[in-house]
Length: 284
Image (cartoon, rainbow, N blue to C red; front, side, top):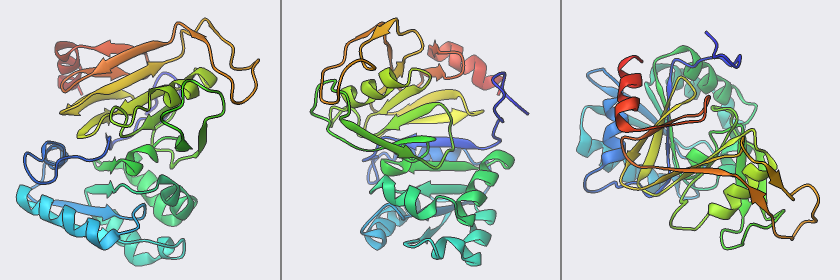
């Protein structure tokens, strides 16, 4: 099945989290992920590739999911491209219902997993099965086809201040940035959308996330803010006529702010109030 723009509609759900989700008290984000799978026991594989302290991160998530209950949690501490081709990991991916990428450095995710059988299996699973592919912080930033991997948060809207590369390609025509509010990352995401207006920019606050259904329908979850940048209506910018390091001018960038229960239609550029979103979700 394809959307009207010709892209395949995935059967799975994406859950992208802005980082620093609560792991000790209300566990709103993690509970939501578990609740989306309608089986007695939710089989979760946590991928710690982005982290430099994978065992420590693993123990932290193990405690959190134990508090939620009805979960079976395993960890994949994949550190090399050779490991990403191992049959044991591929078989485990095929059996789980949730794949969860931890935070750390998103460049580790793209450079270690990109082009491997492991990532091919995740992509196939996402498009053909009722499953969840989730990621927090670096794990969220890596989901999109175009991925931010470096760039000054404190800089004003300056050309060339942000570095991008290919992500793992779970969602198209979108750029995701995490820790968005706390680290003041407005300017770097706005720069990217000014230079590539065909993309939608999604800035995720901490302890906040989005569920993406059908590859385009966003539902905001959690305690903070989700900021949407839509550049399709830009009337003018100077970005193509200035040198790197110079300030950017842009006219008519559309910006929306979502909180828990609000939504956004990526495909059609529509802000969704809770009642409108609920109607669409009931029809999903």
